[in-house]
Length: 360
Image (cartoon, rainbow, N blue to C red; front, side):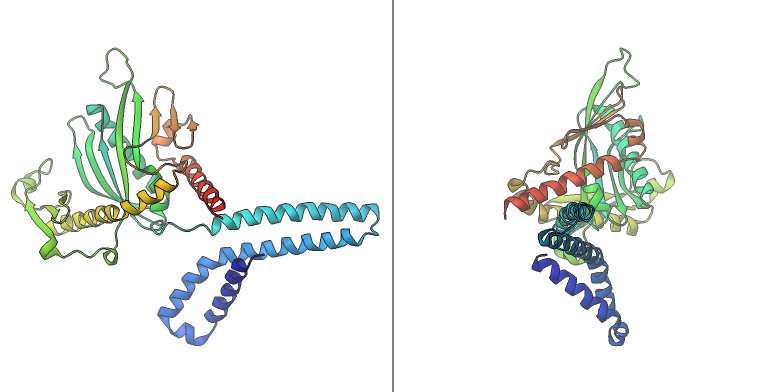
């Protein structure tokens, strides 16, 4: 077992001991930090212990085989132990490699999802609304909370644009694979000749920025306008200037929100979106540098990239980044995304491992 694994195991024992000490328990801040470290190290420590046991069994079997003098029955038993312990060592070592891969610092963050209709006119807008429904159902299945920030609806029930947030454990770690161009192939209800149409929708998944990550000077960097909201809403829409538009002067980035009746709530939502989009811009140069070095099987996540096709006549979902096809489009559109997202996550880890081995 290498020194790195031994260091992790030793640190876990040290943290475990510290958590039992009265001075630690009385220091709330220190105790909380140690508990977080304990939770992070525990699965690693358990895997390291399992590897140590497997290595000990393998060493014992080798020693017995080298000594010789075994009868046939004992020799068979030792040989089987040698094979099984060697296989266990290999499996556990690979699992530890995956567990030790660098974590995406955004994985535990909440997200803001932007869905926009692309090529295909009204059919694209209708599919954008279908994707919004799909993601809200998926979020509900994982116990996440969704909140609508902005929706620009069409007369036929579609939406040219919808922006919403998802709040929940590991939201970005799962949703980050959804960024890109989604293509739909289906026969629109308005198509009298029964011809299949192809439309596209773009999806962007942004990790929600925390206040400490991005400092904004409202007085010098932001222009905030309030205006009367448009669309459905009755008398409130016509009489109250509750809608908020925020312009980030250094970049020219503009966000607006008119979903809530309260100007304060609309401003809060708009600020959340602005912070997340600015953070995404800040990270894009770093992400592009990484992407240029490693074009993994899951792609760069760039919105110009076609990532998936939804073929309704064939009930088919084709995930182009990993050449995966499933014939469960109906359940997929009802929020059952885990099969595809799990496969993307596995492919991503495999690509990281391959690069890690290459750079050794």
